[in-house]
Image (cartoon, rainbow, N blue to C red; front, side):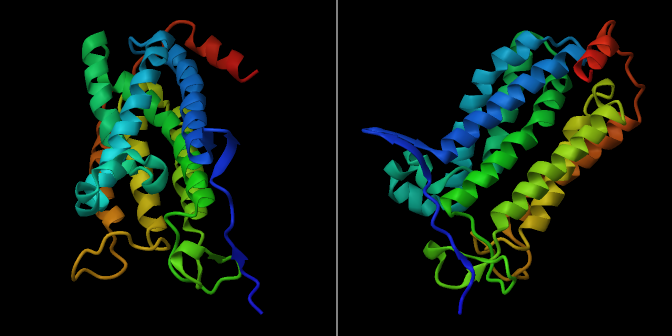
Length: 280
């Protein structure tokens, strides 16, 4: 007798007549809002010339960048032939989702423009954004599981899940693995950087730790996730997601090395008090 859980979760959280609210949208909204509030707190502690108002203003930029970049990443990285043949499908984000690497590139472009317009140091913004990114990633992966998409490889473990859209065989719930690795795991790494390594006083360190942490977590998670794009004669355990994460790993390692080999900045006046108040 098959005792594996058969995925039957409804991707729609609330439906009121023509208004349909999906868990996927709620996950993105919640992730952005939580990261925004925490980013404003971190901005008060930064020794660089950034203020909470900058994080407040950047929220709109981030929302637009995540949506456009994430969707274009899904279109261009994973199935360009299908989307170019069916261009209206590009607008249906609830059907195909969004690609993380595309969203990352979109936010990076938005940050480059934003810091130039506001005359801010680049790492003053990127470190704060990267500190909050794992929150959104965690919620996004949970939404992937609810949607029954990005399922795992076939598995014989007791906690395997049957995703009807993928066929009758039990599979790894890789979305939940990735939520733990890319969300919780990378967030803990960021916290270590912030509070044990003085991350905000080492420009670029948090950005580097995030890039390294995500690249490693994604590469491990891909071992359990069903490949979405065939990559020719390479071994089966090498996936497209791992290849896309390689530049993140290399860039992140460089940023960490750079940050740790530069002088530590002095904390701004009142930052220690604000930190103490925040932990009281």
